[in-house]
Length: 162
Length: 436
Ligand SMILES: [Fe+2]
Image (cartoon, rainbow over all chains, first blue to last red; front, side):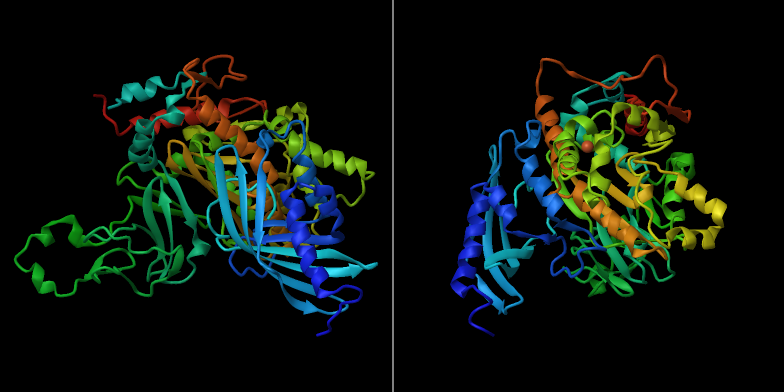
């Protein structure tokens, strides 16, 4: 394993994961979408240790169009499920850097995710796996996978993104 | 205590009393009568393909086990040890071998429920155990019928037959299964499980509510259309456009799509076309279907594009995409929605991939379209507490006396199917209540 993937340091990778969580908490979705490579997918499996995103159901397997739709919808004048708006809060552990090569960086990050709206609040424990790439000196998200500890439980609406 | 007369009085054709959605007493009666007298969906036979395979679920509030018996038949048993009541199976599925064994005192039962053995049996010598029903074993439900792979059960020992109950509505299951070149479905993975803080009947009614998509889903489908335009209408369209955009179709689309109702509360939207009609073709599928059925028949099968078929009381199936949603009542204001998908055996994988996409885009707890719907149900559950008005109105396109024992096709925006459900609701609630 190299110490340096293309033009970034391991510290920059760790900061990137923290920054992404903060963007989601603060609702800075334009900046957040700009982190993504155009053909990336946000995957949240339904089954514990699920391996296939296509031929069984997932909670999320979203391309760039769906992610953009999801975040634009949040601010729509007739988005009734966001009146009032939801808020979220990530508490994250320092990411493990599992791969660090010029082609590919993979991190593994444990998080507690809290989402609230009206009088309801819920907590999800999860592991986020980020696949990152360096493009023109910038770290970008190639893919993100979120494994909920209780992915097979019955949930109410989860409206924002871990 | 509510009488049959009280229950009947809650439904007066064009309107229903809000207590049908909010009252604990009504819910308890539904569990004791409606879900006992009707044929209720249990599972799919592919969930228990081998001898000894079982799967646990519930019929109304009743915990049951679907199990494949030694003779290959599917049995549906109450999930309760006859000794002290312990649930025999706790996990969602598994294989129990030749018999079930209670984890508490090791009473064992054949997979048809019959008592096999009790440890230290001499303790029951000279007792009355053998004179009780408990000595027979795990009780089976009243009746079971497997129809083209779908398992239905009636809890009551006596009652309406499967054929009389479903009649011609089975044509929607037929079309779902006929879409497989092998004439067979297989469950694909676990279901989505989405908890709703509302009455189960709101979900069933919404399946044929064709005047809500362009309003409640403007936030998701309307925004999707807007983004696509902003991008310059790129082709091929993003998958989300194929799945979500049809929800923004105008009223005329839904009016012309038509609604058919059958006796006993069953009915479907999409008689002439539906939001599933314009899906892109999957290479290799039509040839495979033609090979199996002949080209003419294959065309007939694919030209049927029924949208949502409600099987009263509490499931909906989508024939064109092999999806089934089970609206499981957990209380007057609590419903668990399980959304299953099935593989068309011998059809290309792309079809299943589209179905899986539909399931997660529309029916997941993380789905934006799901959020639109749940917000409406939960607001209704809260609003119905209001004493300002006590009746809910369901009389769109009701222009005279309606005979729900007839099959009819009407304008796709009618609320007739909701009235049809409530007609069946009164019938199967009160049939075992007596007249006192
Ligand atoms: Fe809807």
